[in-house]
Image (cartoon, rainbow, N blue to C red):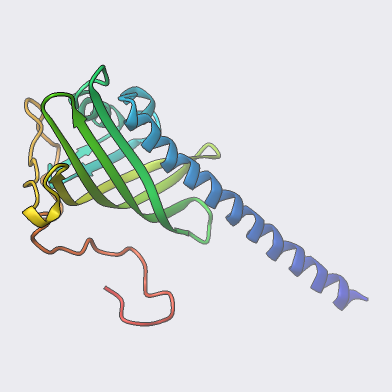
Length: 205
């Protein structure tokens, strides 16, 4: 009987761990999805509040912005959402790994971007995110958001005509740290580094 009770205890503990991981997976998907929806509509304060107090943001080789308030400054330097502006930011294809202690996590995402300014320009874009997350007071926050832009192209021309070079800076706003990687988007080739090992034991990058 004692062996059966101990086996049941171990099974219950394992199921609790599995249930928590499943719950955390959903919470992380909702967190990153919320970021995309807020960016869609220029809700910069709502997006910034998803970050940890010491969270970082790095996009398109523009350098690293350290701390929630610096993230907020970066976001507010982007165009305001108004008539004639489209900035869809769809978060797709998550690969999420939660640390054994359940307090941190890493995830890779693909984001598909529509950008349009009425009467001026329209673009397709895509980025790969390699992000970090941390649980604070029971809630998940973005600890690191790193967006590698893989391409921008003019909507009416397409990628066969080449890509738009990366915008390396935000006017009037200097980063706290230099870019982590020196790269260029399509038609150049660059594979954003993976945070995880190959899931079946194959070659890892």
